[in-house]
Length: 195
Picture (cartoon, rainbow, N blue to C red):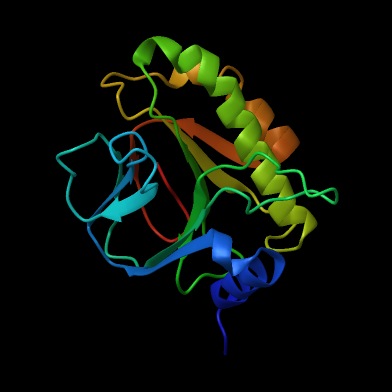
């Protein structure tokens, strides 16, 4: 039987132009590091995944308890409206390679900005996540009422910034079905829970 995630990956490719997607599969790494290399490579590279902390740049750290994880990252021009205008989106989405309707889905947005600019960039990041999740629901890539995880990372910030970014966490779950986090470290507890 085909897994839901294979269908999800195929739906993503069917809905979005594959030229604007980066697929990463079978990530068994115990520690996944997600880094935005745009600034240090002068936009020659964007989001990338590492199995150790990269030396050149700070990263979002995801601890993985030996689950088979896949990810899809969105390049510019990936999301266009009916007039061909680009729609703001988050960086990408992580999911279990052998996913079901009950397993987690994690949308991420990285902001590689100076610490003093976190407040300015946090609301835009929230809107990017909400827009991408809604697109996935509208296009039936995920169920309309599925509760998903989303994380906004500011890798240059060493201390906690959750309360600076997320003002009413319950509101996001109630209204948008999004468990919204603001951290540079996530721990995947099991196939259903991220802490």
